Length: 297
Ligand SMILES: [Fe+2]
Image 1 (cartoon, helix red, strand yellow):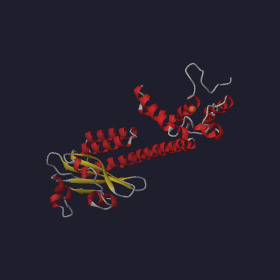
Image 2 (cartoon, rainbow, N blue to C red; image 1 turned 60 degrees about the vertical axis):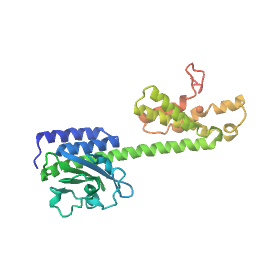
Image 3 (spheres, protein in one colour; image 1 turned 45 degrees about the vertical axis):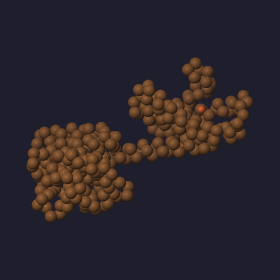
């Protein structure tokens, strides 16, 4: 394989960047743009397999990229579908000399494909999608060494993509679990129905106004959703009262930050859970210390 020092430099730089980027959308764009740059492709598409096995064009670049929007390929359909199903890369140096070239996309959009490369993105267990690159710039055709360099690149990219997807899914799972917990609390008390969700929306608006980072906003949102979780431990004959509370009932109600803190004490890892824990503990406190809980020293 012939790799120029410029290409090698680009590969190394990209692999460093891929490892530091966990946000799936940005990563997908980066993978496609770098793959195109490394072999001087005119256009490209990054297809990802969805849960039902269909392929969707998650990122597309090039003159007719917008025409791919909304398109989904059945398993095995089209060249991208075949590459994923067979788990084999394809190099078609000159499409006009290749009998298998159907050119349906060209017919539909007016794009003129001369040369193409399609590489499966191999995850740990299965093919997660493919990289399709079209037309080498300056009227040239893709070569075996272009294929080799994109293969080297795709191996690294697929692992990063899989990690990023897992990371994104884990975050979604955690967020939905937190929402389920918050709404089960709200369901117990119709009087404050939707309270946790509203508090979290207002908190995020205020956080944005204060210039919080995306990570801080995410933590704030989670902490706000769970701030009243301790009310789960307040018995119905106090929580659901429709009249003003007596001082004894108030004292019971005022226990909810501590109960919440005890419930959330098992959250791990501690470094990430600290803000959620503190939200439950201190959300009824006031700047002058006249709120609660009253910390007994
Ligand atoms: Fe509260």
